Amino acid sequence: MERRTIGATALEVGAIGLGCMPMHWAYTASQQSGEGALRTVHAALDAGASLLDTADMYGPFTNELLVGRVLRERRSEAFVSTKCGLLVGEQHIVANGRPGYVKRACDASLRRLQTDVIDLYQLHRPDPEVPVEETWGAMAELVAAGKVRALGWCAIGARAHRRSAGGLYDATIRQLERVQQVFPVSCVQAELSVWSREALDALVPWCASRGVGLLAAMPLGNGFLSGTLTPGQGFEPEDIRARHPRFTAEMMAANQPIVAGLRRVAVRHGATAAQVALAWVLAQGRHVVPVPGTKKARWAVENAGAAELSLESEDLAEIGGLPRALGSWY
Image (cartoon, rainbow, N blue to C red):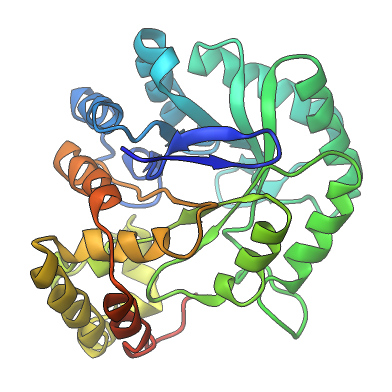
């Protein structure tokens, strides 16, 4: 697989990564934590998808334990990214950016991941009760201690936590500029897909101009852009899509022209709609690395194959002209 170099610390990873979250968080009641999930992670590494993206809150903790089982055998082949800063309670998820907590969380993640260093340590969400410089300073101390190689910022929840008018990522960029004064940001993780393009307005260019990588989360639109979901099929109650405005039967039907457009391009290239959607994300900049999530080995291998797909300018123009997604995102 093509390799991409991202971030101030020149992190080298496969052009497409693996989002491990669906194995233990947010999608189904029958979370896949056994041999099937292990096969998926191994299949991704076999295909060159070296970046394994997890977080301590997924499970919580069980996803890191799973990734740790793989790292124990294949550490040299993997680039591990995990996150801190969110605590999962019985009814609420709360941010915790206190320096002491961040350091304890890192040590706990290292134990679960069965490694002596985390390649990329991301702040899952800033704590509104703690100056972000204090949180980031504690994370920088982890780099100095040799426990972490590089630091990243997770902006996946920007919509849900938007507080002011203006661009979706304006507040995120202001925070990034603050923490850059403390320690370099190597990567920012944010939503980016054919049906979620807001990051292209300011965040993707901001990262490109500063040598910061962009990890594209949900590049397949929670599975919709793969074309494998049927309007009205329903989702298990624990699946986030069961409550998602874009996954009602009405909205899934209304957004089918997007999938149809991806399929048209896919036919020309002997590819799948999912691979075209991922190739479009890759085409947004050499600093962009999509991290599609999946529980199944077959999809991990198919996703990795998108790195071999080169879209022509006509393809990109056709995709760019597809209808914007209908339905609110949150």
